[in-house]
Length: 165
Image (cartoon, helix red, strand yellow):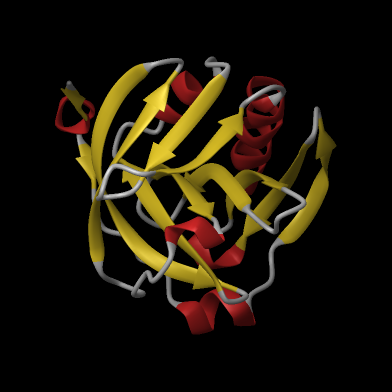
């Protein structure tokens, strides 16, 4: 099983709930099924986001403050997640396994985890895949994400990030 150490993964999510709520995301448009947005709490980092009918939210983007890429997945299937606590998770990209350390947090009472990468280009590698499946620390599948359109949307997010300076 591959580990993200080879990709120089950073396992700390620096997301202040208060700051995240106080600084709402700024909409930059809709591309291929994904919202392109700017997150002031991430140093005006650009991201793509999609929301599912079950209120699951997936974000893939840039943390401009710390010069890194990330993905976050909010889903009620995570169960009890403590904000700021780290969790050993696994995710698959088109069947290729990766171990990761994620940090827990909440968005509108929906639990989630986030994984950050020093190699910002890894988010584009994610977008080139067809699907991502995320598993809890107990090995249970939390969610399967259709990545259709994410490559095109991330191209817009990259342009957005270039415009942020």
